[in-house]
Image 1: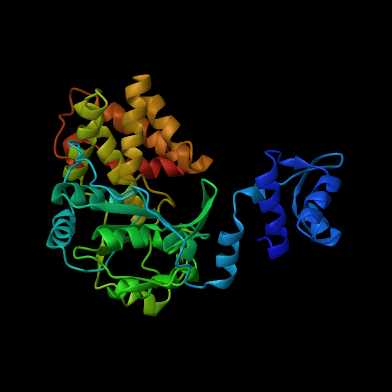
Image 2 (image 1 turned 30 degrees about the horizontal axis):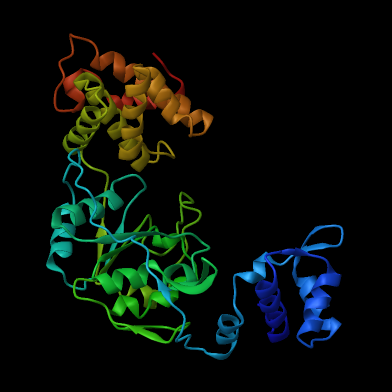
Length: 393
């Protein structure tokens, strides 16, 4: 921020010349023109960017006028500062390949009601939490705005802050304020990745007016405004280490959510429909491959629950495999590329299971059934167990 003397020098330079790169001598001359001492010129030189021997670029200061700078220092309410609202709030497009399942009906009902009803959705990664909220808004014809939380997210990111736009200092409203003013759904994604800086949302989660401290403006939530969050944990951290970035959320903060929705992975029948829809989307429909994928994932999840493996195959990863299959038209390659993210032992176990399951599903003598063990004449759990122990007999 420039002081008053620096601002006066910059204003005088801007009114006298189009030059932005000057020598200290020239800056001193401009300072002398308006009766300022050399020390004020040198303070501006020190603050400017040096771009060459004896050459200093002051363009970074020309964007701010003395009036704006003085208001920033003297007026806490910033009454003359304009506000920028970007078109970040919108009604999501309906995804014709989306499969309604789980708690979708409940989330849709909440969104459709237009009530202020803070909702916390928790569940493992890749099980459709965010997509469920987005498509509920799409089908309810409700505007929404999505905010991705990181450990660095703070009040400036959420409520808003000052930005330099077109040479003018303006207050840019954050997504929370935009959603409140529009009566939209505010989707806070992965809220358990945030820090205690999220406590600035305490009042927002009560449905009360919020004062923007930097401008003094009071924002009243418009009818229809609501907050829905997603997280991989329940705000108590991750004891098993699967989500090392997940933080412990203050109880007073969590208490402001009316309900907590637990989103599991879908059952075999539902996941089959999801995978088939994804295959339809990418033009690579293969019922046989679908059966292999959903039973392969289901077996791995059951073994995970029993403590046999440390990783799971999410619904999102199955969709990634489908998309990869549509590109390479090779089942094994698609699966292999998409499980490379796991450690070597887990990856090899998953691929070994895939080889055995794919061969079984592809065998005409074994009819494709509802996904139970007997339909294939083989125990999928047994296959995974042998894969993990290295027993291929």
